[in-house]
Image (cartoon, rainbow, N blue to C red; front, side, top):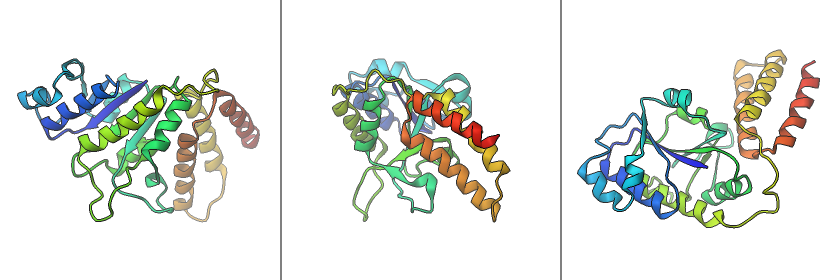
Length: 234
């Protein structure tokens, strides 16, 4: 299951356009964080066309933290128009096609996909909340896309891959709880390990969060890794 999360929507037309695009590609769950416009305005409804059911079903929260108190997701995936270097671990993205392939291989997961603010995108703090990021390859001369246009490309890739049945559909995936246990063990080990600087320690935290997020571990793999880390910790 995929839930779309639009951060601080500023343009009612974009809200309606995202609803319409979601309906086009078989998605129906939309959350908006701290909207800066009237999301139910005439402009929004006109742009949504026959996706009024999605518009009417929008959940609104004041912040991501408030949302996480009510909603549970196995993975939180962000979108970015800015490519990071190899040294900026949280901002190293995958492509929409790679994202769709991961989702296709793990249909049992509850995934949230974050769409950033029009113009400003996601903050550094919001990016750290994500397991990994998705970036749409565009011209370097003008890389940042309109929020609804970028969303449509992501939705299309997800839709294209949805009906292809995989041979590992019967294998359970690691969920939010499995990931929290694994990363808690990693944190214990990192805290006990000597590093030249605190910055290097923090780099390890970020690296492990992204590794666990991008790998889409199976439940069996996560359990084996948890067992191994417990032995290392002891």
